[in-house]
Length: 229
Image 1 (tube, rainbow, N blue to C red):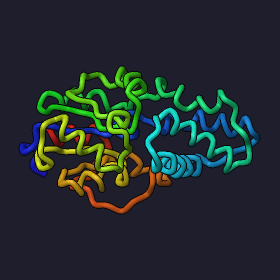
Image 2 (cartoon, rainbow, N blue to C red; image 1 turned 180 degrees about the vertical axis):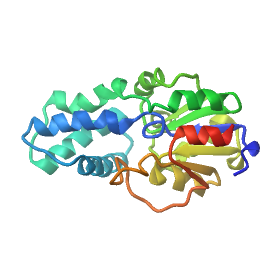
Image 3 (cartoon, rainbow, N blue to C red; image 1 turned 60 degrees about the vertical axis):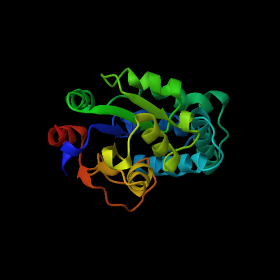
């Protein structure tokens, strides 16, 4: 890939920059344990990916409501009725979700050469909490709340292009999900980098499995930054 043709890079946030699986799993384990249930982590994450996609596929609702729906669906799947506090538990945990160890240094390195932006399936105020962990100021943040849709909707990427004032061929998008990031971005002519952080771990993680071929695959952000700068 010839990186000199890009001036701007957009990033997925959760799973790419923020370790959302490390954030999600403790809360989901506690939820299940409170109702006498235990499941392997790989199965919990796979169910999460399915339940989240289902909640995001209908009429737009806030990400808070999406996460409440996920908790409700876990209850339906496992045979329990979540309390009001349990319904709030996932979105209330987002401020504690950590950045991956290589995220901040990679973003700071990339910012020396590129304009950096976010395209994320998130609410504005929830991302504001995660933003504190990322170590830089972004040129733009495009959220699902702004778009009133969730990736893989093309609307989110089209809004990003409009906000940034760019044509698809000028933009590089970096994300951890073939389903949410690579396939829709490529369909618009945006080149893509897949950060395959799960390459050494079992299971598909907290995303919907999908087949796609990114323009470049890397195992982490540190590797991407070393190639791109």
